[in-house]
Image (cartoon, rainbow, N blue to C red; front, side):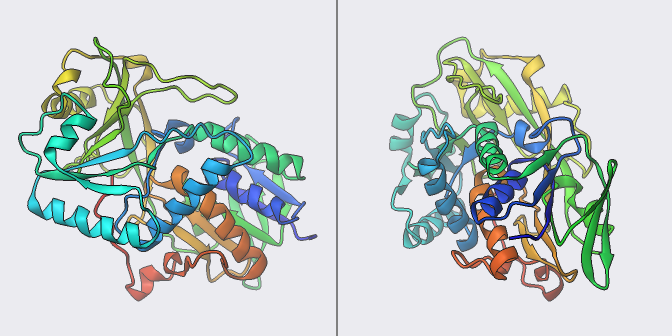
Length: 391
């Protein structure tokens, strides 16, 4: 295949697109990253969770495909199925989880269950369950190393002919006669037959240079890293309060080429602060520590004596769309493709996304899975999706 394809964005989504294109025989694939290393943006700052407990069919399908890929990948993604435990504080939340479980099982996720307060206490001893009426637990959900996944994708893509250029900031996308003709970077012009925007929070400004209105907004998400005085409960899953999105999980560091075990004492906790404005701010705010701790102390009293490890607290960017679902597919500019707007789910959905985009470019549609509902035109035709469990 002799067409040149330029991928804009060197996070895990861009790397997955490169991997799946080269797997199909494309050799003239160039991946551009604005930073001096891959994964320096949202990928390297992610919590590293993966789950199939979603509300919409498309998110569940993306997750189930990606879980299977990660489990059987030709490289180690450090998949650790410790589970996701959702906690419901109201009957409305419990009914929502029950409906979601029914759909998840219908789509093939057999390892997800409703769970009552008594059994929640056995899964995670020490939780405050006074205001919990039930929940759901997905056994195949769990954790991965986002940088190991990125590294596996890009290493295999390069071995198959792809090229990577770091410190290459994209200035604009060239369009000629309604079709992509080039990607213009800080290093000069790259003529191409197709381009894929995988630049996360920067996707909207990149798309705008081709006169594409992409409704993606950046928003800071902060994570507190803390060290607990006592060992964490054995086998601690991701624990999520459905009401306010507060969540916590065992902590670990992510590095390229590094395979570190979980610490028995280190924990991450976070929540989607409703007062956080849209911005490109990635500075960690010291005031967020107490906000997160107030929620941690209520839900998990065993974390009361933990101490924040300030040098490991971090902030990254979500790339939010109006319906908190990704944008995957082509657009009105021929040869320009979109894989962005994941609203916090880019790492976990990257395997399915890479394959979908590769098939759309090469076969005009994603044949292994229908992703047409994620096309950009849904924002114009009013066919928005809805996901409650957005954290």
